[in-house]
Amino acid sequence: MIFTVATGLAGGLALFLFGMHLISTGLQRAAAQQVQQFLGKVTQNRFYGMLAGLVVTIFLQTSAVTTVLLVGFVSAGLMSLGQALGVILGAAIGSTLTAQLIALRLSDYALWAVVVGLIPYLFARRLRWHHLGQAILGFGLIFYGAALMGTAIAPLNALPGFVAILESLAHHPGVMLLAATLFTGIVQASAATVVLAMTLAAQGVLALEPALAMVLGANLGTTATAFISSIALSREAKRVAMAHFFFKLAGALAFLPFLGLYSYFARLTSPDISHQVANGHTLFNMINMAVFLPFTPLVGRLMTRILPDAPEEEKVAKYLDDSVLDIPELALTRATQELLRMAGIIKGEMFPRVMQPLAEREVELLEKICGLDNILDYLYRAIARYLARLNQGNLTDDQLLAQTRLLYIANDLEHIGDVTVEMAHQWRKIEASGVEFSPAGQKELQEMFNKVRDNFATAIQAFAAGDEALAGQVIRSHPEILRLEKDLRYSHFQRLQQENRLSLETTSVHMDLINQLLRLNIHNVSIAQAVMGII
Image 1 (cartoon, one colour):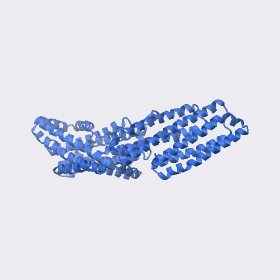
Image 2 (image 1 turned 135 degrees about the horizontal axis):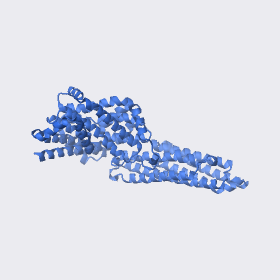
Image 3 (image 1 turned 120 degrees about the vertical axis):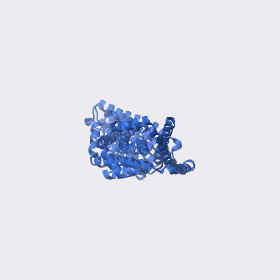
Image 4 (image 1 turned 60 degrees about the horizontal axis):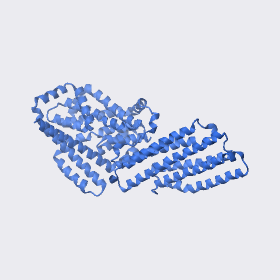
């Protein structure tokens, strides 16, 4: 009998977890882009952010993907950590839907869901219908897996040794919570632990209080997913994961001493013990949300204090998350965020330094510019490898075009870094000679640089917003830069003819800088063309 029970329980759990995987990946692939846009628009208010997390997680059936999206938004500066934490609290409530559906005992229709989902999954010609069929198939499998676990557990009432173990655990709810936490951390699905608690309670093997202790452990154990995925990511990712753990741990520790009261309120929600466990799961997350939502900004600041920014993180691909490589929309978004980070290094750290007059220059400027260029080189290689790992067979024509655009833009940004280093080398020559440009020459170079710098900012803004009209402005301005380049050469040569001493001594560097500024703008135009699909 033990072998039969173990086989049924393991098989049911496997089907349940596989069904969860199919639902999650199917719905993500079907609507990841729309979900990103929705989250980006409605998270400026904590309350709306919480509702957004609730809706998105109900739709995607996984709070883990919601968290992945939030990490990207926080990293890109599109929302504060405090705003993201509000969404996480809402996502925790949304993730309880699976248990509520299982409590409705839809297992009688499970195999019909498998049939209905399998048809579009196998035969649909459009990817969206294929992914929706995959999600429906997943729902069928989780219902069937839950029913299989219930059937397997039923005979355990006749095993005195097993009942004695559970009775012992029932008297030690802290141990039950810890066991459920470890189990959830291993299977990476809190819904599986909650459904197991519901099944044990429904079969009379477990009373309501220890079943709710398992629910608390499931909520705490689900934070392991975010922790594991954040290990190789940025400080922002680690802060989100730590805050998620903080919310769940504080809630579990607060509920555990009042398990009797918790059980009392759960009993009021339904006469059926399965519903009581599922409702207790939802109740925990709703109370947790109500308590912590007003304090999300404070928790955000606390996480930042615990995990401050680290300078050594500069040479790390902060946004390239391998866990979303099989979801092209999310992977392309992550690559875009990393490219915007490259652009931020150029705009915020390289450009302000490279045209400083000698009197205002930093010590060892060339070394600093070279160090920043090394970061750009590293990020370029990381982005290129990341995009190359996208499954080509999984990409639509639009996604293939987007992938190519990103590679073009990554290449241009890396070359802009190289050109900036060459400009720093030219300034080193001026510094070594001790002779500055003539006032007129310095002014002309600064004028051209300002126009090129503004064009770069416009090109990056067009890329970030997908704005082809802005990209067109950069392309149309290029003839003006070409004319300015010729005018500056002519003006410099006139000063040479007048035997201007400063112009004579700096002529080689002056010409090289004009040429390098022109090269910078050519890369600006190339970025704008990529935004417009001219590749």
